[in-house]
Image (cartoon, rainbow, N blue to C red):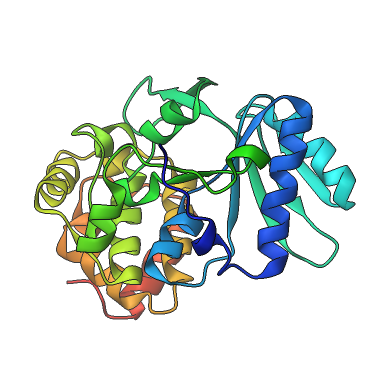
Length: 267
């Protein structure tokens, strides 16, 4: 029988908890399954405040988002290629909606090819074990926890661990995210995961990312409360001296790298 974390969910602000309950009701009425996933679930177990609402739908996510946004009079931005949507509510609160999916990568660093999948398949494509927890939102199952990769053990032991050995080859942006999560949460990158990062960096996979994706990851890090720590970690992992990250980049990447240089964080 699945573990139910209803008591933990009660720690959320009423605004967030009611939104999740209403999302489950809406999904149930449409014949879909809805789940709260990722950071907000992870941070419930850490006792950290996190109101980034990510909802995954087993079903037509944009159809769900359209109906749900209409019920709430929310603004919706649709991304049909990936069957995702961003919702902004009249009070400024935001939520992201995505279709449960599987992903395949044509080549390292490329955006994935996406097809519909189950919640279990969706969790299996994620970056780190600590981000693979999901909670059912449909009324009869509300609060049931889905855990496939011993995520709670890694949360307890404060470890950042990838799901498979090709993780940083398929998506090298995970290198940036590993450092960002490690330093934000006060965790440690697990030893085999760190080896995989160093291998991916030394083999030049970072340089296969588009300028836009590198810039996006650098902006996220620079927006952290203390960006110096993840930047120092990335430098120690060899990211900023890796083949391809410097030279031939667009102006935005160059500007961000200069900003990092000015912070005297690079060797």
